[in-house]
Amino acid sequence: MTTLPGFSHQRPPLWAAVPVAIFPVVAASLVGSAVTVPQIAGWYAALAKPPFNPPNWIFAPVWTVLFAMMALAVFRVLRVPVGTPGRRRALVVYHLQLLLNVGWSFAFFGANSPAAGLAVILPLIVLILATIAAFKPLDRLSANLLWPYLAWVGFATALNASIWWLNG
Image 1 (spheres, rainbow, N blue to C red):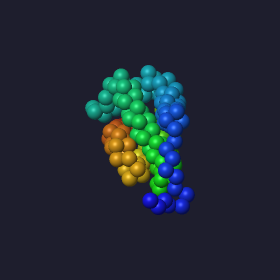
Image 2 (cartoon, rainbow, N blue to C red):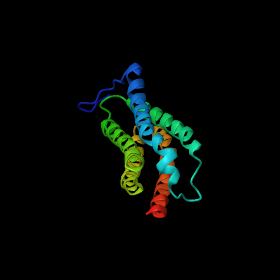
Image 3 (cartoon, rainbow, N blue to C red):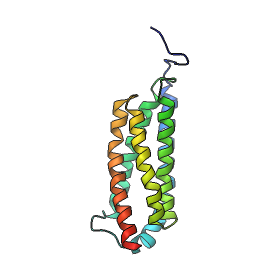
Image 4 (cartoon, one colour):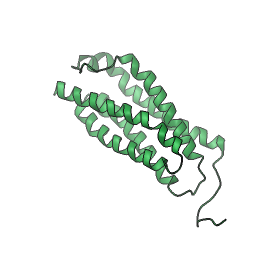
């Protein structure tokens, strides 16, 4: 069997992959919540919203499931052997989209700006698609675990745009 130059068949140890997969997702969740929750009862409650706006209680369980699926997806990619072509790029794109995910909370809720939220969520969709594309050749299940996340962010984009339109 021949190996590519610089390609290692070594898989990262389980004990290392678990926290590297979980910590960024938990951090994103906590930081996003810290910016979002204080705005729910005041600023967000006062906004005009479209008829398809879900009740506030639905967001926490949906995001919990989506973040768990993201953590599992990235965990599986982290367990792909180091040096596998595309692995590093996939992890970079994944973490960039996670940063934009948090950035949306700061833009929409932190800045009280649906327009700023749109400016962040549109590139977020592009990066989620790029993450799915980057994960697919490495681990098909990891890529598929991100489709519900993309669907929810697509819904959130429609909601964000509607709130911007109704309140602009």
